[in-house]
Image (cartoon, rainbow over all chains, first blue to last red; front, side, top):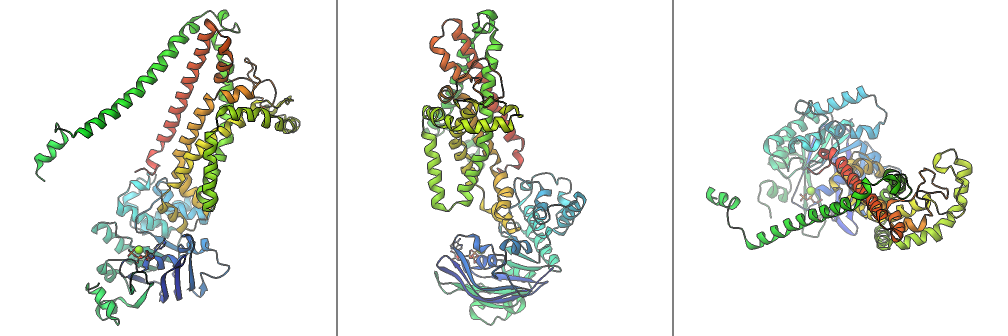
Length: 259
Length: 315
Ligand SMILES: Nc1ncnc2c1ncn2[C@@H]1O[C@H](COP(=O)(O)OP(=O)(O)OP(=O)(O)O)[C@@H](O)[C@H]1O
Ligand SMILES: [Mg+2]
């Protein structure tokens, strides 16, 4: 379960374009790390290097190291598919598989990992995952209906259930609430707070209040100018970043006087 | 916005001229299609009518209309079915290769070649089947007869000329490949990146991603593309007429012998020049059956697609 991630001197490229430069940071287990910063500074790009989704873009590559409990995720004989099985991801827009039922959505990752599972065990795991995602009560009577028939907030919680069903070590979330109403957002924030007991959580958000409400550590990303690479400016406890940041850009950003 | 504006817009408000013209034109086109379809059906029924009620001895062959049509209907269904069996995995595999495996340059070249295949006239395919493909199948079919002869499909005796049902189905499969591949390829390209990433982020390999996200999403298009192909295979005339040396009253699953059932379309084309009187009505009656079969196939396909509409990803 929950593992520590150490990033060392990470440069992230799209073909020849250096999008993010020189990121070094430690992400603590059983905590929520929030990544904030202006649009285009490379938060999503960075997040996607943590589970090796970045390299799915043609010609995209990274230089540097990402260690999970001292094992280099970009080591020569590390299989990216294996990495993604241990590091779950929740996307900005809820994306349950439209061709699958609610049940099958949650079971999708389990079926990949462990093809032969007893029906009873699978039922239990699906229920447990949906309960952890605070969705069980709402969907228990319609597990065989399509996942795309749920509301946006329910769909996003379904995606979280799908991600945690495989018991990942780390959970990455890229603006998971940006497409949701305040009530659904509240539900997901509560859920994140519960989940951090067990998981290492990294969340990208544009919502300062949200970062302050749910995260323990906050990292501020920025870029010097358009076309320049983005980078991590400052990483500290959330309280420090929002009350007394060391960097003046951070201060201007969190107080809303940016640009 | 004041409420009055909304109500006048939706009901009884004077529409813009462009809207009126366009809605009139599209309604007209829809009605026109129905009229043409009804006209074709009426023509077929009217012309087939005398043959349907004629004495069985007056029908060519002398055994009545049902026994006349049954062998060619059988041949039609047999050849179209096996053409589909051959073309389905190929079309899906080629579409997958083009959309998900091939490097971009090769993919577009291959897509272009497949589209070219669609432009080849069917008579060319027929000639190719009869004079190129058929001789090449003589040896392999002999082998099939010797080793797999216990399967009724390969019962033999293998044709010495190679002009068999097997060759006809292969030619038909090649002919329906372009349209089926094109439709399926489009569907695969439309798979939302979002869903592909969802499965990859769960730790799916590329093939698992295809099974989780791409194939289910493209399911109804796969069926649709294959049905378009099936329609072409059912109605194909020249290619079959050239390849097969058919005997009109054979009903057999044997794909490799020289005793082959004909198909409705090929039979009409081959028999029409010498037909007169009730012969013509009989041929048109078989055409009516083909029309009905094609209609049924299309309705069946719609039903399959609709059955899981909730899960189609369209909502
Ligand atoms: N697929 C891609 N190919 C090429 N460049 C890309 C690609 N995706 C992102 N970029 C570039 O990388 C940089 C960082 O983008 P990224 O999406 O990571 O920003 P972000 O911080 O997540 O922004 P936002 O807050 O708007 O989501 C941008 O300059 C962007 O144009
Ligand atoms: Mg982003």
